[in-house]
Length: 604
Image 1 (cartoon, rainbow, N blue to C red):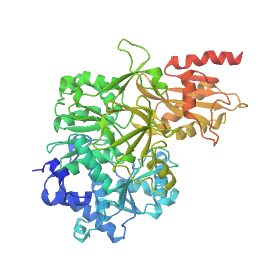
Image 2: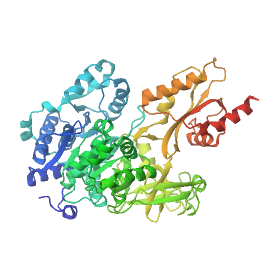
Image 3: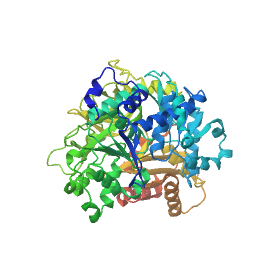
Image 4: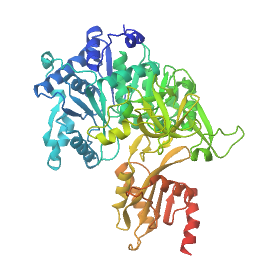
């Protein structure tokens, strides 16, 4: 029987590392069901017990120890499944720094390998733990990627389990580096967030309390292992709790979203998390016969994070699935980032989500003004991301003056707690700037600068936007410079380094907009054809739809004195309709009508 989770958190002799924790579980609950993989999203694999996971981890660690790998970096390249969990724990058992990364995919190697190559370079990885299938893919491109030759590639399925008996405890300290969580985005500038053993254990304890886990909790996750949401709360927190975890592949979810909900029904799942787009996808794919098969009454915490939360999606989900046991109280909006291990805030279990209805015009000026009850237009409704997790401290700070904001002002969210990571791997200057910030007026700190804008209201944390240029569409992060590069290489009429990609909110969803300057003396081209080519290229290279494209005249894209593109200024000019256009297109015709008039005036 699983010991009380509260007692585990309070026990002064509680394990200090995942290594100690799993060893303890393997001794006290050897036959306890730790993880089960749902093949194709449906069929249960043989469950992985704590004893089996411990033995597999020791065997992998013992092999790594034969190569004196302690302190080295090892890539984890796997399809979603049980193998990657054993590989991750095996690295920790050997004192090796694990690097969970997206695996290369057949048919998409040109897209996935450049970023992988950049991570190998940045981390100076010495090992790659993977499967036979992925090894065969890599073999076909080894000649093009000499960085891969510097690593020792290991198919962990071939590791002799008898090696477990040769494993030696690496005597790691809780403050030692456990893994690097590489942030999604640009292939040219990957950043590895440095997470210690203490970060992971401390934050798991936080999530146990904040998310309302109990001894009889059951987790289901399809979030990938290389995403902080999937790794920390999806996979590691169940191990910390000693409660069973079911895993699905992200591809199985995308292919059949209803299978996620059917599995929640079948296994009486209490905790499962996903980005906003997943709930939206379920509402659009549901069929009457599927609805009849569901019973979501066991679901206590439906985490909603990793991208902007749309209140309309939440409302639609409750409207459709309330008859199947899903209540408003089930939703658990949250906010977090890898640099904080995972969650900064989370809605307490059993409480209803809270929304703020504000004057849109005031919010655009970074002022928080409640809309009048009778006000129907010019309002923006925001979903709270919950209350601060446990003892987490947050300051709302003006991103330019670095002074604390007034209570009715929007500012950058700064966070302080032992959950904050140690910085970015081998990027000391950027680490100082991001992880060791101090307020200018009160000299408080150090804080983690999140780069996200928001405010605290009645103890609830709200997110309004991002200082960072990161674009999040359907739960996937995209860096604007990557999209801009894709566009500018399409045609010589498109001016290099004079384009801006950004997102706007339209009809409650985050949408991609591209504004691109055209060379003043360019050859004649077909506007409609070029816009069509841009849309197709972005869809193929980045797998996201484009909501609006503006081909602009020279002098449109503003830059800083150091040459950086001012994307926020360009975004505001787009929303104001003050861009000098050559041509414009959008799925929403109202967005481009305002440009037509200004263009006619220019031509006159």
